[in-house]
Image: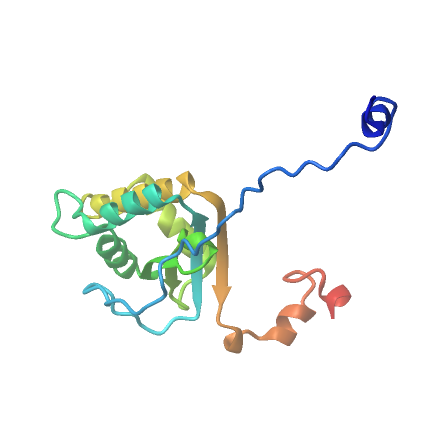
Length: 191
């Protein structure tokens, strides 16, 4: 005699349950724990009101290469890339370099390069000064130009690249900026 279940399954009946193994996904925090670190010997921040940030996401091997670059003196000098960039910014009167930071969180591979700018120079003049350093540096500034170019290339090799201009909020004449349609055309809509 035939089992009635076999007849039902062969004629559009509901198949019996089948349990398959479930592979569990295990996630771990892949970022370094947030902790204090030493201040580099070249860093001597001064007051500033605006900053510029280059942000990107890098793989751990990219972060390791960036760190090696940052810790290696730029030939023919005895200075690291960040120290050269900082010294060039100060010599050009445009500000100083705050440093290259590894962000805690976001997988641990968010890298930020922070430049602090002088309030004595318009942003357009700062851009022209950067262009001159990169395109036609004085011989003494060549190592800094090379360091900045390499830093930018490493930033370009990351993903989710973003540049942000940062202004000290307490120092912004907010009503004047929002009320000037040439500086902020959407002020009448956004207010």
